[in-house]
Length: 106
Image (cartoon, rainbow, N blue to C red):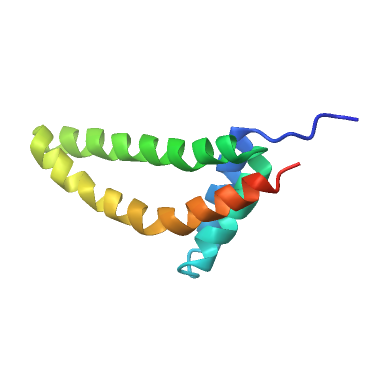
């Protein structure tokens, strides 16, 4: 039988896709995305990486872009804080769903 253990990349892809499709459900959308992405990741540790790795990449990217546009790191940090607020609002249900989904992975 083939190895059915998921990958972090699969978890990230599923979480991103479902989050975009269910953006209109404030708590349930991120939870479902986290559950499915955690299950596709193949385990709790992979699910946690799948939740936090894209967020870290987005936060650093926002900081770099804002700093390049303003040419001042302090203003770039303040400008990118809006992305951090959106991340914090979305991470709770996504994280809980990912942990539960990762626990149910094959």
